[in-house]
Image (cartoon, rainbow, N blue to C red):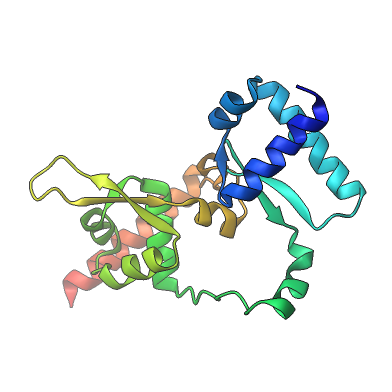
Length: 189
């Protein structure tokens, strides 16, 4: 297949699907290797940038999605309704960070870490499409397992969960001491 045709197929598939398309599916459709597809997509993105186009191809966890460049949002808003804004309270951010780092995780495990009920936070994060149900734990009651979504990656600007920041051991020890001190204060009351 000619290079122009390959690029046209990639654009057509990514445009028509709307959501991200896994590398394995692109490899199957195009009958090319991962290295070849990555090179073609990188070249397409360079051309989009050079030609000052309004789109680019975003990589999300070994999948690709055709997206509008962020600098074009103001023009989109003039045509369409303003995108829904999330109100991310500290509670939601704390719950989301626990799910992101511990996934797959049950609601009970999140509550055990936070020390309070997280029903409302989990429901809001599901509503915002930042987390999703991943299945059920093979344990009594078969509790739901939660994990993050591609929307989470997109929203926080990371390609994969491996790109999430890590805490150094000193910070982790400080957090642990603070949590233990807080737990002692609650017991004394």
